[in-house]
Length: 219
Image (tube, rainbow, N blue to C red):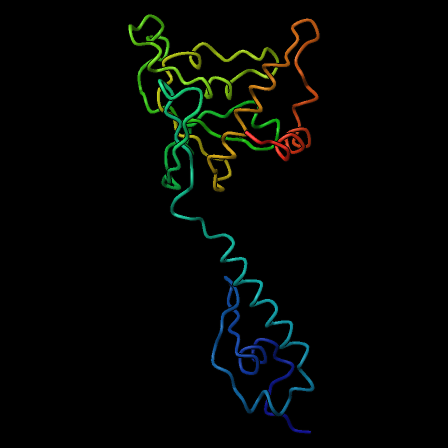
C-alpha cells in the first residue's frame, strides 16, 4: 500500500501526524497533518502515543522546575515579645539569606527540616553583652534553635544582641508560623531533657523522632 506518511522517518512522522515538534531542548506542540494521521494511524500509533507522553512529561517537568519569585518565611522579633512572637512574611527567592548570609540551625538539619536564620542587625552581637537595654535585643527562641547538638549550648554570638531575625526553609518551601514554633519548641525539649552526665540526647536527632513528637504537638 502506498502511504502518504514517511513512516520510516521518525521525526517526520512525529511532527506531521502527532502534531509534536521535536527539537534539541524538548518536545513542543506543532500543527498536525490530519491526512497523515488518518491514512497511517495503524502503522505509527505507538510512535505517536510515545511522543505525546514525552511531550506531557516535558511540560510537567518545566512546571515543576519553575522557582517561585517569593518564599514564605517567618520573622521572630524577640525582645519584650519573648520567647516567641512569629510574623508571617514573604521574601525574595534570591534574598541574601540563601547566598551565605543565612546561618543554618544545627538541630534543624539533623531532624530533617533545615532552616536558615538571618539576623537583621548588622553589628557584632557580642557588643550587646553590656548594653543598657540588652534584654530588648535578646531572642530566646532563636538561641534555642542555634544550640550545638553535642553541648546543647548556643555560640556566644547567638546568646545576646540577636534582635529581629527572618527564618526560612533552606529548600525554599513555605515555612508557617506553626512549623517554626514546633522547631524551636523541639529544641527547648532537647535542652530540658539534657543530662550532663549522660551526654547529648542523640536519640532525638533524627527525622523520625521529630515527626513522632511534632504529630502530637499541641502548643
